[in-house]
Length: 408
Image (cartoon, rainbow, N blue to C red):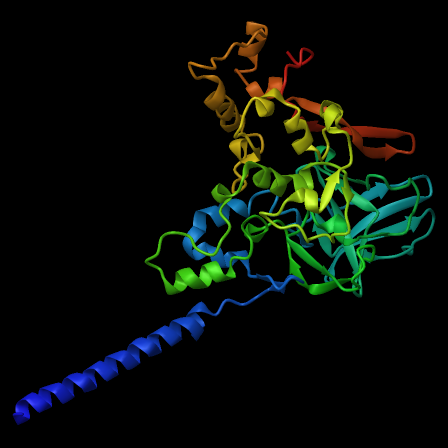
C-alpha cells in the first residue's frame, strides 16, 4: 500500500477519534454541566422534585409573568410590606376587638407584628410576628406565625372590601389562642408543604421544604425533567416530560380544580398533598353532601358543585373549568372576556341567544351575561364579624349558571 494512502487512512482514523471524543464530551457536558444544573427547592415525600417556577421564564416568559399576577399564585406568600395588604399607618393600624382589647399592627426592623393590648395597659399582651400571608387580597387575607416549626393562624385578618383589619372569620370576639394550622388547611393555598410529625392532625412543618402559592407544578406535575430535556434538546418543540391538560379526561381536568373548589369533603386515609394532577379524586376523598341537591350549595368554596348543577354543564359533554377560565392569567372582573366565553356557545345557528329578560335592563347592563346569570350572592357560611352582635356576609359570584329574576 502506498505511503500516502496509509497516511490518509491513519489521519482519517485520528480525526474520527478526536471528533468522537468531543461529541461524547459535549453530550456529557449537556448531561452534567452547569448549564442544566436545575436546583431543587423542595422534595415531595413521594420523591417528586420541585424547582423554582422562575426557571420556566426562559421559554415561557409571558405565561409565567401573567401567572405571577393570579390569585392562585399569590394564595400563600412570605409576609412583607408588599404582600401584606393591611395598613401599618397611624389611624389605620388598629382593631378594636371588644371594650377590653385593642389590636395594634406594628412595623419593626425585624418584620410585621400583631400586638393586642388590654384597656389602660401600655405593654402588649403579646407580640406575634406575621410570617406568612394566606390569601391574595381579593377578598381578604389571614396571617400565619411560626413558633419554631409549629405553624399557627393569628387572630386578626384583613378584609379588602372595607380596607380594614378584622377579627378572623370564625374567631371568638375575645382574645383567643392562635389556631394550629394543619396540612389540610394548607393544601388549597400552596403547592407543597411537608409535615414533620407524620400526623395529619399536627401543625409541625419542615420550614425549608415548601413551594409557596399554587404554581406551575401543581397543575403540570414536576417540571424538572421537562426543563432538563428541553435544555438538552432545544430543537425539539414538542413538550416532553410534562402533564398536558389536553391529554387528561374531562373528569381528570375537573378533579384538578375540585380538590379545592368542591366544598367540604369526606376524607379517606390519604394525606393532604397526596392527590396529584391526573389522579382520580374519588380515591382520595368524597363529596360531603348529596349530589342530588347541588343547587342548594353555598356559593363559598364550591364552584365545582354549583357548576355541575348548571344546565350549561349537564347539556355539554366537554365543558369544564378551563372552558371559561385561563389559569395562567388574572381574569377577575374581565367581564368582556367571560361574556365572550358565553357567546362562543350561545351564538351559533344551532344554539342562538334567546334572552327573555327586560330589554331595557339588558341594555343598561351592557349585555353583561355574567352579571345576570352568575350574579354576586351573599354567602351563608363566609361571614365577617364586625361587632359582638353583627356579622356581614361576603358577596361571592355564584357558579350556578341560571336565570335570576331578582337580578334582572
